[in-house]
Image 1 (cartoon, rainbow, N blue to C red):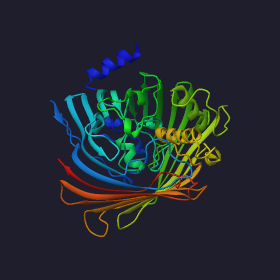
Image 2 (cartoon, rainbow, N blue to C red; image 1 turned 180 degrees about the horizontal axis):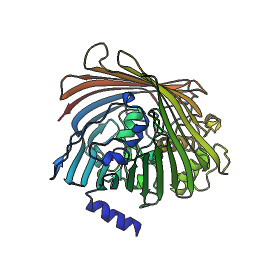
Image 3 (cartoon, rainbow, N blue to C red; image 1 turned 60 degrees about the horizontal axis):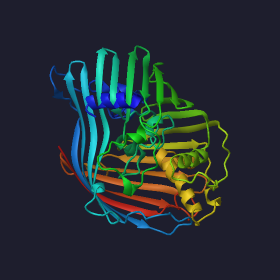
Image 4 (cartoon, rainbow, N blue to C red; image 1 turned 60 degrees about the vertical axis):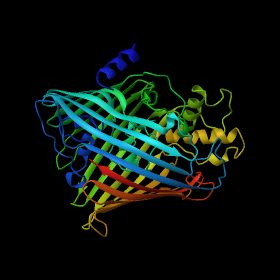
Length: 466
């Protein structure tokens, strides 16, 4: 009943980017309010109108990206086909918002991909993939009350490298071009849900409910993506509820508390950010709740969805008992006079994967089960390292005007391996941008990042904005 009724409503809405206040004309993700104004770039203001008009702040562009990868040998071989050696992506990316009537707006965000790879047949339905990120109606019944219905990218958190309170991130990333967590957060699939927000003099209250429309489905493979399917089985495979509220304590301090319920699990969270002087912003993000370990959750999911045999032994022995587990991201940003912004963060995830290589390596089916555990963590957007450090730098007008350099390092503190990415974008004009990206995984063959099949990735891209 839920499934049929909700799909009917979604169809009537014509199939989000951010928290609910973003639905107010010109509004931004309310979680950004936790960060002092000088630490973030303000979003564009919107223009109201009594008829159907396009609200300012939209983005429409066409981009072509060509990627090549360098492969290496592995201590635990990946079962099945090897990752692609080259990929060509041409896509149209649209983010638009329209005012339908005085209290009603419609938001759409999507990307149509034309894809070719050395391991992908042509022509096939997988050459054309449509990512329906967001499509929702927003109603403002009063000056401080907002209601949204549709597919919404509901985000929470103040950190950049990892967001423990970003509960709706799971299974939402599809065919990413970048490993930058900030990019993944914006380009992922939204969830079909109903959301409401009340703005108060002392803060705000947000509630959201996402209904279960499908049974849990197997993890998608890169060479098995549907063409036009909105993939709601990834985002609406269980009833989920979120309530969060923030309070303004003055002096740019607005702590936020969150309560999240997913099927039979309840989790709590908090976000806190505060300015220290004019150039430094310190922030903390925490979530916790009673649940099974990530390894046990992965094995259960694989068996329940038929990917792993029901009688398959645990390749990594792990207790199936639930316990209270915490996730933490704590960090600070610093902006220099030359417009370089640094973010340094420490991440803690109570899931412990240090014994991944203690499983039966390289043999089948043990190798397949071991890699399934990692694929599950990637699909759920969970780090597999218990302790890690994230450093990100963004330099506007680097060396010359219109050149922006962005780089980050995500380092596993247990084995010393790391993921490094450097991106360069040169704004040729107001409409054209050219750039490139280099991503590298470093570490020993039996380390977190060093065990991955891809040694390095190189991408060149050009974009035309409209």
